[in-house]
Image 1 (cartoon, rainbow, N blue to C red):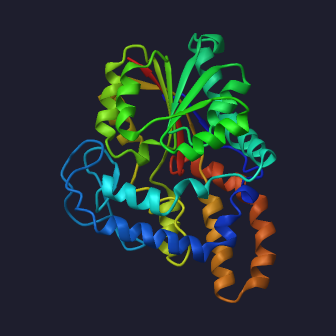
Image 2: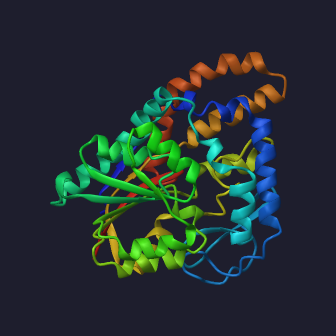
Length: 343
C-alpha cells in the first residue's frame, strides 16, 4: 500500500493565478505560438519514458495536438517531440520566466509561504520519518526557477542551494532572498552537475516535464551514489485534460504549451525503477476543479452570461476543496509530489 497523502486547501491560489482568468485571450495566443513551435518538430516515434513505439489512434486532441497513451507504461505523449529547437523557440522567444516573475518582495514571500512552504514541510517530515533529520539534509534543487523552494527549505533550517538555466531568474531569486541561493548553469552542464554533486537530496519541482534529455538526467542520478532521495513534482494525466479538451476556447494550463507529455502512476513507477529508486511517500493534489471553475467562468463571459457567472462563482468556490479532494482520492488529480528513495 502506497504511503500517500491527498488534498490541499485552495487557499489564495485563485488570486495568485488570476492571470488565467483575466488574460485568457492573450494566454491562448501564447499557447498557439507554442503549439506552432511543437507542430513543426519531428513526430514522436517512442514513449518519452519507456521507449515503446508510438502507434495506433491518439487518445485525444487538444489545441491542435494529438496525445497518445502508452500501452506499456501508461505515459501520455504528444504527437511531436520536445526538441532543442522547440525549447529555444518557446523558452527564449516567449520569455517563459516572465510568466512567473513577481513584482516585489511581498508578493514573492506570499507565494513562497502559500505554495512552497507546504512542499518543504512535506519533504522534511517524510525524511525525518525515514531517519534523516533536517540538519543532515543537503539539498540541490534543479530547475530552481526564482528560488521559491530553495528559499522555503532554507527558511526551515535546511542546507539548500539551486541551479537554474535562466540568469535573470537567478538574479531575481538571489535579490529576493538577500543572498546567493541559486547559481546559473547551462543546460549542457546539468547532467554532469547532478552526477557529481555531494547532495544527498535532489529536488525537481515542475522540471521533469520540461527536460529534453531526460534519459541522460535519470542516468546521472542513478550513477551518483551520494544521492539518497529524489523529490519531484510533475503534471499528471488527469481530469484537467478532459476539461481542456472540451473547452477549446480556454487557455490550456495543463497539457499543451511547454508540457509535451504527462505522467501517470505507472509511468512514474517505471521511471523510478529505471533510476534505481522506489516510492517513499507521495502527496497527490491537483488544480482540476480550479481549472473547471476557470473554464466555466471564462466560457460564461464569452457567451454573454456574465451575470450567471457572478451568481455561480461564489457557490462553486465553497465546494471546490471538497470536490478536488474527491478527484485526488480517486487518483485522477493533475499533480503529484513524490519522494523517491534509493533501493
